[in-house]
Image (cartoon, rainbow, N blue to C red; front, side, top):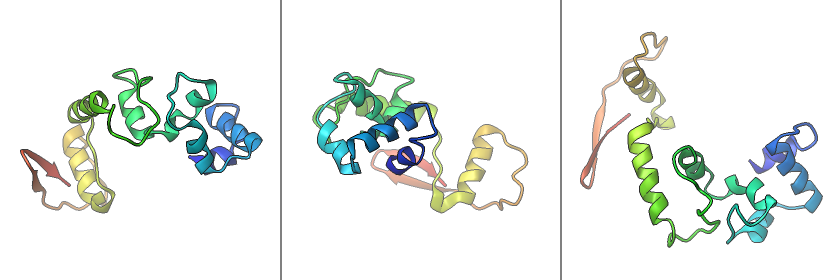
Length: 141
């Protein structure tokens, strides 16, 4: 995301361009984002708001449609994430189907079954395997 923002700083009037312009104006390297904005949250400043996806970006992208993420602090410690971890797990179990790049073909077949796709083109059928992790049993592709 860092290098993409820099590459569109002069051409994109939207969020990525704004981040890229800020990075250039402040002469920030990627570590400067974390040194200057870490230990905050998106309510502290406009800069904190713009750079929020640099901090737990995937979790924020999944959580945002379902719960407010303003309280998800920009830190690496797990202490205040209990609420968000629980919500994230609930959301992932109920709304998301995940494929695995190393098992691309099997993932496509799984998606076809889950979403009712009929034509898979050149993807060949392989067998499914069940993986057990603790009390949880999942279908892995």
